[in-house]
Length: 363
Image (cartoon, rainbow, N blue to C red):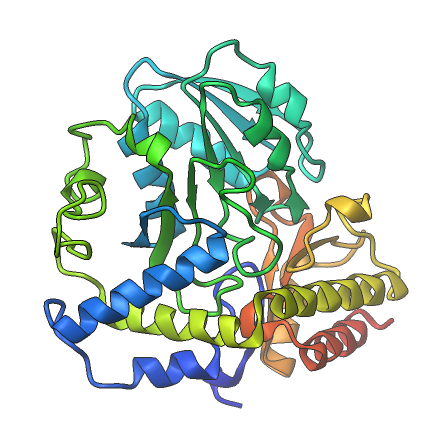
């Protein structure tokens, strides 16, 4: 089997939709070509559908999901600002690191890895934070954090949400949840190669934008027409736009919208249930004990006692051409992270993984 035929079921890049592969194979447009600007406009409209927002400033930032995280902090956090950050996994930790680097006073709200963060704890952590930040779908643990109560109770604070693993896989409602800033990644449930970070920003947040952030590249104020309503310049990057990746994202979003967002989320949910029930039948224990807090698109399973974590993953890859993810951060060597995301979220793929894992473990 060719490497390109491997079944990727980790937390990283998922197998792309066929439409994405076709888009990447087409002739490249120039980044100033009017046809590309039309494609970018349509891509942004499709992102608004997935985010559930009417935000004018909605576009793919060039760079992976971490670039979306960086852009969110550098444009909306000033030195000395108090930022409340929910931490129940590696990416909550990363938010703290990024915020500190930009001079924020970080108030951490920690929860056990594998458990959700209670929204009330975030809302009560500081009387007047400038910003509250949390990960919706924690990629390192497979936990879903609740967002709607934060939007209801945030008062004057901005609400920033990491939606890297949630967008396209579970319900996301930026406007309905009163989220001010949200970013995602292309390689998870959107079924597109890594390289872009979809970002959406509310008008409320734009009113508090840092006028001259420390990063020139990630300065949202230099995106003419998005921040200032400049007629005829609503799609202008201040640097060379990643043309091929935007075309791939356009195709991946189109595949999801054509399928139907509700249908795509139902497919992810069905595959997640099938996988988690199958793992239980193999006698394996899930990290997230409460079913209502588990992600369907990213399942964390405890490595059984006496089993060599790396050897199992290596055998799955070399013998069955199936890749699952290792644990990250403090869960390294303790869990496997199994993804059912994007085009990979298919019943046949789940059954293939369960059969192969059962053989490798002798169960």
